[in-house]
Image 1: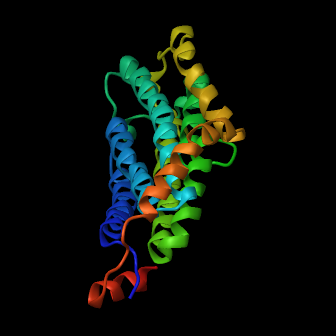
Image 2: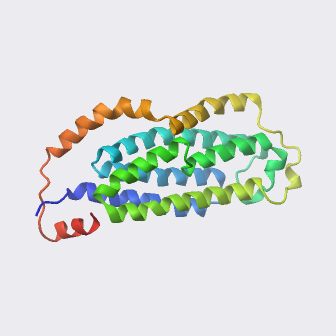
Image 3: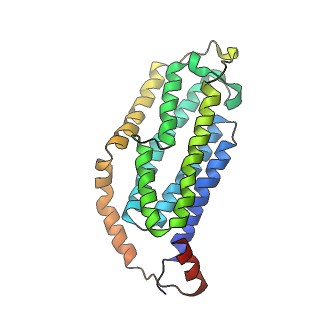
Length: 238
């Protein structure tokens, strides 16, 4: 019986575990920085799933996701640094209503959160869609499970935003200054990449396309024969 290599299948399984488990752990965090850290684990699962698919779309999406995650997470950590520099803690539940006191900071954080959850028009959306399109051709069941990570990501990011910026304002932070010019100038270049590649990803994808085509040719030269019970397991998840 002809089937797919077992190693990529298990790589895909680990990727799906990363996506779902990382998102659930991120949702449980009360520390802003730890939430971002566990969100990184979840988003790297998309990279593993895309590479495990051995499809052009999936591998393009995986490579694009690595770049996009670097830019989006850079925004996240810069924003965490801004609030920590002012409040000297990162406890999400100790804030509240900060949008009233720091509207510009709230706007930049909303932009970063929307990029992180894969809002259409921002770069995270393109790479995740490519991963799902490629992975669905190879591992349908795994891809369906992985898609729940999109919902979980939206849940923990929007819930964190609600607790930090909306609701009743904590008067303890009435004197916190809003984001300053130096911090804005640090965020804008990264934000431009996030928006640009969300609207027009072709330059990046065209740059890596030749390498992806060559990689796929090499992969297709590898013998793909396995039999017995392992083959049956693989066929079930295909």
